[in-house]
Length: 157
Image (tube, rainbow, N blue to C red; front, side, top):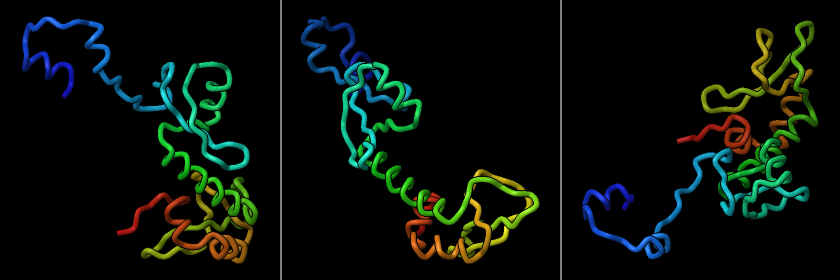
């Protein structure tokens, strides 16, 4: 029950503030930018482990957040860890740079199937490959399910 609902239900009852503080549950932050002292957050360590910390707003906390390495839940941190691994494999075969005078193959999904395709119109911030074969190598190494989930961020029915 929300505090406002309790007030509506019980009206002008007197409460002992110290007792009330014991039972109130602080709302969870909605984003990492809402973290306050003692809020729990997760990071991806250098070795890939997911660690739990308590926010105290120091330089380390703020730098980790600025780098995109602060997550509200362990599940979010694990997802991002897997997404970064997929991206690293793609960059093993590809590049971030879109070249207007060069072949730009990318990985797309057509009819629920992952395929390499030539891309020559605009750069939408994806990862590009010099040849269709390089794109296929990335697809084979990562696997379609992982590409769909972690790169395209799509849920299949």
